[in-house]
Length: 51
Image 1: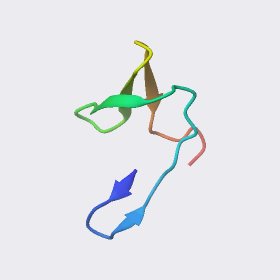
Image 2 (image 1 turned 90 degrees about the horizontal axis):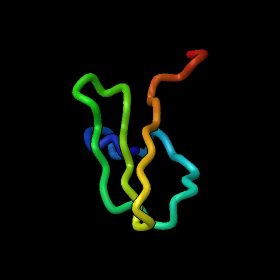
Image 3 (image 1 turned 180 degrees about the vertical axis):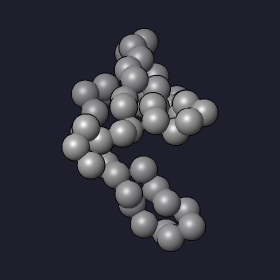
């Protein structure tokens, strides 16, 4: 994840999908859905369990 204002990477994920084709972020910013080239989708929780 990239912070455009500060120009730095804020988070990196190791994904099992071959190629991410689309991303969508929930309105409250807590979830992101990733659609892959293998016709799968996964939802990631952006809120850490232990901050």
